Image (tube, rainbow, N blue to C red; front, side, top):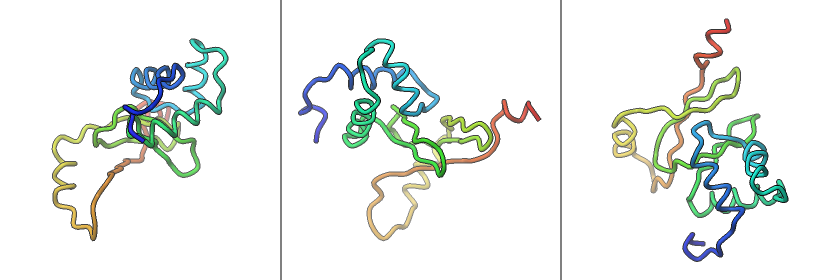
Length: 130
């Protein structure tokens, strides 16, 4: 389904607007709690349905990590992420030119439709605690 053929939705617009203000890749629960401030009667189910729809039409990306809640990202251009194994924080990582180079040289028996690169380690805040 194309975004241009979708019926306008106040809830979906609020979810997308909220995500576009964030760089911390929030969970559905965080999105729900924040969008609820402007739309008090929105349900968690509505948030999940709209996140699934926005993901399906390519307006956002869903980031899934083993054993943790899915995260959502409004930045849909190819980029890398860093996930802290201690606090769970997920942040964007800039890799100048390397990603495009890797994708252009990848020899796969088919077509690459999506690329997900995640670096896992300890963030600066957690390192400062130890």
